[in-house]
Length: 328
Image 1 (cartoon, rainbow, N blue to C red):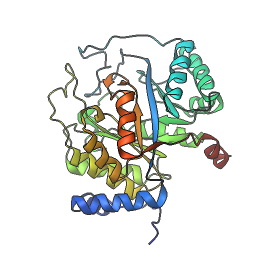
Image 2: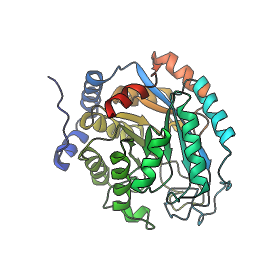
Image 3: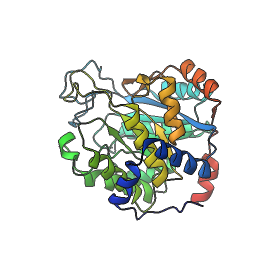
Image 4: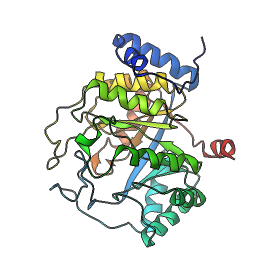
């Protein structure tokens, strides 16, 4: 039976999948995964914070918000040479996507943005898929990034629309969706997922998956993050998300968005090899490598190489050229 790509999922249908017996859910996720992807292949991505801290937003999970007292040290935009060197190091250790994050509320048309455009050009010329996460974007700014060679743009929904104002009050859900529309209209690949463990209900997790899976086009990449509670933020005392909660999110995302890269993202540092293996089995086919995800800890590159050897996984090659031909 071949799986049909759908953009008309109902919350009830997603809830039914999400709440299947866990072994059946993993099996179904694994089956859909094999229909659309090489199950032995995992894309390795590297995320670098090119501008850290001092953000005016109030995201309750984020140590980079200026209003919270955390250990994050503010630094201005890194020089282009340093960013390109880090990209080259990431490429040599097996990453095929390099993502640059800046703690901005939105992109402003200034010298910093011009410098980011130069960084995008430089990384793109290395043959890597270059991704940015810079906050809100206008359609004009999205086009400039596309012209500079940007492959993908990350803008997570974080949670459901209903739970959103419990987590962030300095922007609204439509701001998120408008940026994603601007990115898609500029023919940039959309990377959008969320975080679990923010004090949300099961319906919120289903609601977020519903929003993602009913977009005009499914995001090409769907990061699934487990909250890493940071001292000094409002969510510092949140309990750890269990692997079974991650597996339910990953398998459901895989089943309802079969072609997407489902990324096992933040929270992986607290998972054993066995727990990560369950996530790959359920349909995850991408990880972030390197010691940090912006400001939160991440497994060491050597630990990931060992994990790949144990599970007989191989890093996926960059597929930038093929995708760009499709988009022309």
